[in-house]
Length: 490
Ligand SMILES: NC(=O)C1=CN([C@@H]2O[C@H](COP(=O)(O)OP(=O)(O)OC[C@H]3O[C@@H](n4cnc5c(N)ncnc54)[C@H](OP(=O)(O)O)[C@@H]3O)[C@@H](O)[C@H]2O)[C@@H](O)CC1
Ligand SMILES: Nc1ncnc2c1ncn2[C@@H]1O[C@H](COP(=O)(O)OP(=O)(O)O)[C@@H](O)[C@H]1O
Ligand SMILES: [K+]
Image 1 (cartoon, rainbow, N blue to C red):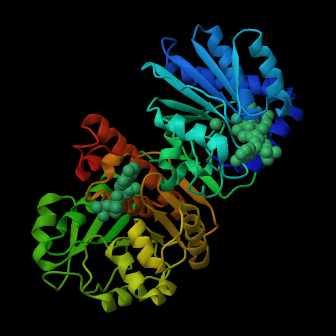
Image 2 (tube, rainbow, N blue to C red; image 1 turned 180 degrees about the vertical axis):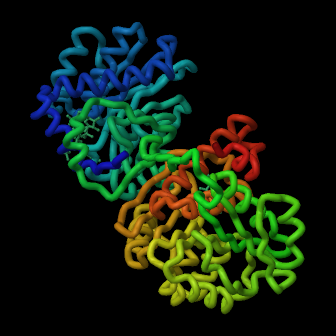
């Protein structure tokens, strides 16, 4: 699914209005109806509903929503903030339509107003939408801060008032909604950790914008949904050779969980065979934990100390739990990997951060799977805000011609063509030791089976999260552990 900018969405609106064709007031009616359909499932008409409207089209949506909820028997109180005579055309039309049915209270600077105290109330935020073009200050900022302080649930229409869709929002007045019900597609702002409080849970509702125009729209940002997931066909005549032979370098004395988890996850994701390279004293742990594995035994008892021959494998993963003893042997390993399908994780990424010149040795489309701290060490710097981080991420993937899965909620998969794909699955139960090792095993499996690297990364991240979501359902986010993710791979 594409993530489009404010400007692109405006073009889409205009295109739909002109070519469907549909008058803009009717498109607003459709948007308001889509919002209401979702809203009523969350809050029934025993909730008193207080709606704050600006005077642009977001406010117009708010007025249309007020009328529709009033008609559904909700106790609705509607405020308009600002000089309504300057309102947009569709705002003014909806003001007229509402005023015939229900009271509208106009608020401007210095007006006293009282926010609801009733426990069973919900606030709808329709002050600003995608038309926000500067930080909010003055009277409106005071209203927003008061709304946030009520402690009542807040539902934002399209986007929280004060939050910029496509760029960093400076510290100023921004609504902190419980839910955002957004139109057609999520906004880039929804995927940035810094905006967690200004988004809440979000849902995109279909308002029937032109599919032709959506197809044409160019973007570098995508949201991975189930529609992008394609299972690899499995012929009934297949044998274990059909599904590839993976090679994993993982684990060290005291860190064997990483090797066990990645190996199991690789097998559970459909690979034909896996060989895992571990130190001598760690062999029993691996072999007993995963009888299906073939073990390649290091001459070193305790940690990674170089590997000699891995030409016969279809894909190679390196790094989980290997320790940081032997960067020179890591360099030797990289020199032997031209043309290999390769994933580097964990300590392997730390090595690359310690010796950035080694990045030159990575084959094109190598997949790196850093968490934010590892990514910082990889690039040797931090970032001012999450939008800058995205720029850095994309530039790094393009300039080094590699794929980077920057892990976290909505893991961002950056491709060498500049695209960034945000993941839609997963939950905070996955913030538990070993989850990352499981991801490495899954992606390794997909690479060995012959998925193109871009798809192996995007789909691996998606399926890892999906299994995590199932694990959280079976247990709970709190009690699930990394092994539960493996158990729920399907
Ligand atoms: N297009 C369509 O067909 C559809 C659109 N839809 C809806 O329209 C929404 C976008 O509406 P919109 O473009 O009218 O902008 P909106 O967010 O209401 O702002 C209004 C004006 O506020 C002003 N302003 C900005 N920042 C400010 C600030 N800090 N402090 C004070 N004032 C500020 C600025 O005007 P300015 O003051 O700069 O002249 C701006 O133009 C969208 O989110 C969706 O809900 C849906 O109905 C689907 C169909
Ligand atoms: N809050 C969250 N929501 C969704 N996924 C998460 C969340 N926290 C962690 N994860 C996922 O769990 C994995 C954690 O990986 P990592 O930080 O490398 O852990 P470890 O090194 O302990 O294995 C990543 O794939 C990450 O995307
Ligand atoms: K809003």
